[in-house]
Image 1 (cartoon, rainbow, N blue to C red):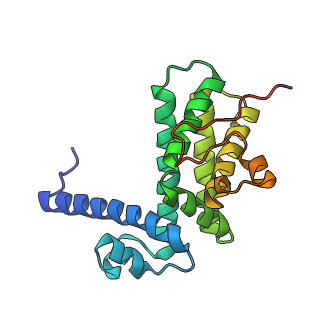
Image 2: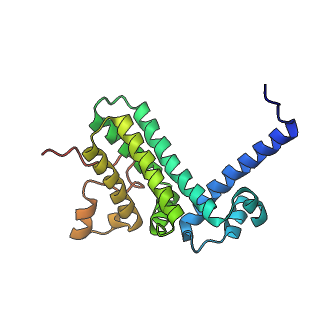
Image 3: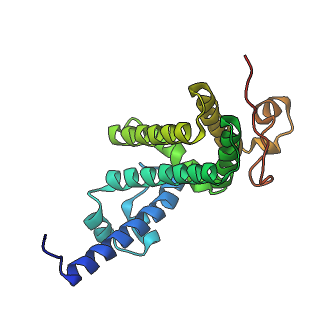
Length: 205
């Protein structure tokens, strides 16, 4: 049998993992406001109640911290959507995707989730961030496809619906009573105003 780690070492590792999780959670909130380039590590450290030096003990640098925050964001979305699929009585792919859409609207009540995704996409000129976004999307699309049993076209519409929700919320289109804004937000209500918004139904060829 492999030697058992000393109790002090195990406790130290557990504490570091807990602190790492806390720092990543705070990093999502902080990076969501100013993005990767404009956010100093000291600001994340302050939000987490630790020193910048301690952050650098757990993360090689700001880039690694931002990537971890992006991964955490996509993981929260993936877990939330899968939980909604597992918890619904729906049986058809369209109904399961509808339940996932409701779950996503609930998720993005946390504006930090939207903003961090937007900032990550805008920083995709950085290879490591681009790779993190690609991984997040790959895992999300795979999970949604497997859980719903939907075809690729339906999953594409589901993802497109999510991006449109981002646009409507971030640009506050629901407050604009003009034709162009109504065209974009037709059938989709602001998540703060409607716990169960309308969803685009399956298209027919």
